[in-house]
Image (tube, rainbow, N blue to C red):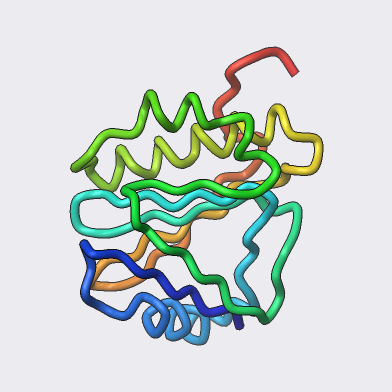
Length: 144
């Protein structure tokens, strides 16, 4: 099971333990981190998202949120402008989920090694939620 370790000045609780517990309870066998990765802080938590093309298997993923939003992977080069223009502080959970979904869908539409589905994990002090957005439910921003 992959363990997410998130460091941020905004949060004082242990995301890694919460994610590991969630994976064990839901019988998730690993956490796919894809080829485009995004993490964004919202008011009360963090959304971590990726496409499903690749997986890190049983490794540990460390995300440092020294900024309110961070992106990585091959698809990230296609979404810097979107992220800079659309991220706003103090988003609600729903706004942040839509922001992450849109950003990942844009990356997947342009990057030939990103793709599949969008996996989102919402982490708050009260728990962990895993959201999957199938490829046919992703927003489309251009003809593909």
